[in-house]
Length: 504
Image 1 (cartoon, one colour):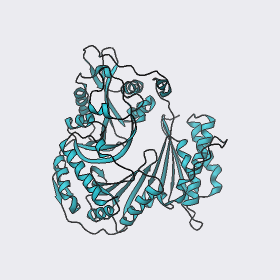
Image 2 (cartoon, rainbow, N blue to C red):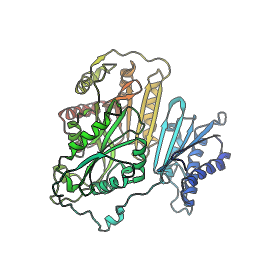
Image 3 (tube, one colour):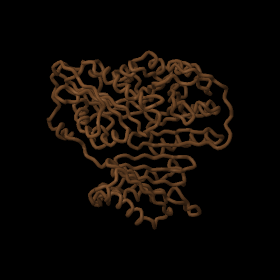
Image 4 (tube, rainbow, N blue to C red):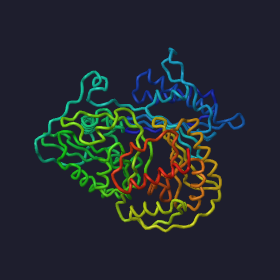
């Protein structure tokens, strides 16, 4: 089998296409080497998605077509369903009832159960290009560490004895070493690390081979991986995200943070990237401190944007900080600090800031050391372009405005309501292009609907930077947000004040 297999199939949006759809999926799952029971379950689950589109996205006078695509890699099978019918977030059938658990059929039934057959479920709306449902099935199992059940039964992680003083070899991570990184992350986090791909060696090796992951490791004298720091480029674009920093308990306090950061920075300089970004958790300030030390600047806060399972790992010397003593183990929604670092001095930016937020935006760009020219708003004309995405696993929806048009305002208001009411989004982010004159008017309209200021996403818009607003469909506990830099604290105060101003 080739390293990557890509296929496409276009069919009429009709119920009579069921057999063709299922045969298409069965063929791909057979090629992926999945067992027969999974092949059948996945084919039926994918047909449920197609059936939902046939029934709710089209009418008899405009039957339309379904575009099926499959991408098979050594680590994943991704099935995509595209249509140009009614936007997915307006389809009343998207929340079909959960199937009867007593049903003897071991298959997925109803859109609410598709996620039980696939590992990742992502809805996207691409404007005039239509809807896309992307379903991912992972093909590889976890690495050598014991499963969570064994840990729950008493096979607990033992506190580590400090390693003897030694020197370390700091080098790039190589394809084929994914298992050793997975074992390191287990020693550091158990099974609580939120980015689950790091527990799957084959996925790590694939990302290393394709350039989506650049990793640096500190290797002890006996060959043990003592620490890791990585950078991901999922779309191989001009931005990278640094993270996955971990140090084995026995090797802490040896200055490995600085050594890894320097080596990774040297490698990044060879890639010609524009900048690096990250999202630091706020259950503690350790990652924020490291980021500030590496030159990152705070540009925004994403309130309650991540569901994180915190588990207090054993330490011989007990909790090392107040957050370890006070944090309650278990699932928690976490606020993230958005940080950005330009790799070269950026060119001056011409922006259209909302008048209400001009002062705070001046501070954010001043903190980034970016020269700006602020212009007065203009009225949008012509059709707009928006993309809407919903991550069913995290419960986070995103409305991304690429072009502001005269029709954009009602679309984002309707999208927010349907993401919350139909899809069940707990958090909705709204991204407005600051380089377009209609941004201030659209910001004001969104705030009237309950969105509030959240910060700036530099270089994320097709034409520059996004102003990010946020809508919460859940509660918030500000006292659980721990921040390191004075500017981050000032920004949080401003955001909370804006949240209160726009109301529930």
